[in-house]
Image 1 (tube, rainbow, N blue to C red):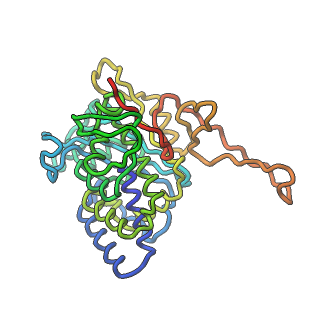
Image 2 (image 1 turned 180 degrees about the vertical axis):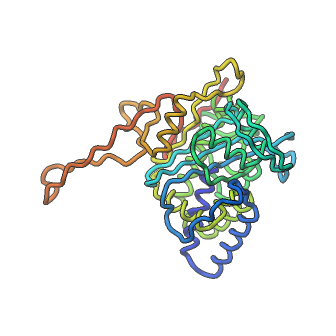
Length: 390
């Protein structure tokens, strides 16, 4: 749901500069709803965000968590004994606001879990040496998920948001639908998904069915869902930045209100100034610099059948580069394609005679390292999802 949160924040930036009593009242309503629904992930000693509106000065990390069980949705999407963080999406925006990396963490990724506090009982829950990442929610709520992902990635995560199946439905409706492309027709009765080949605009329950489908899209694995999520979020970002959503006040109000009621933000993020500052930073990033990657892992470890085990060397390399804002590519690009560079573009030297005065030679941009083994896409990638025929 990174795209929805980004769209809401960008919308707030537009609202703030539009003026008027109606806008002020709408913002007050939105902020009141967000604050009332916020979750403390930092503890009582956390500092308040700096006042003032302006583009976020540095880089930032944001974790979006999707849970599979919500008391408000009842048994609509199945009965579950506990709440699991089945969707874990880490967003990193670089300090120069030239690129962003969105890392999807598989729900079955086996990781170490830190000590957490049970939010229902206040009891301390001991650390675990190895367990699926989606057990973190049941061990201590959103703060525990954040701590677990921080330990996994080595990154500090000051901001987080939480949503559910029902929230996805309402948010996709508020956006007005998202175009998705399928290589062939899909029929997945288990997910309730039936769509033709080509591009369809999905919203509501159909959007959720696409995001949940295992047997219709991809190779039938849970990891295939990550590819669907990345395709959906990439299309969502293209949609809200290209269809006038960010300048359409009624749609912005609808989207902001839907987000306020269906996304629980961390208290660190539940400030209008903070959201707008982050939005202005996100607005600076070209779609080809917004990159979605899957946390590198393998399903071939016999010690953890049916689970995903980190490819630690590749993961460590990737997160070291993310932390340092160093450019990298998603493996080797085909000879006919330009490589995806997460960093400043190389300057094109001018031909003699094009300028009145000779300019000093430009400092060459370092050649980005290709991290073979990563899978993902960029936000401007409009390729279709592969349909499972197995």
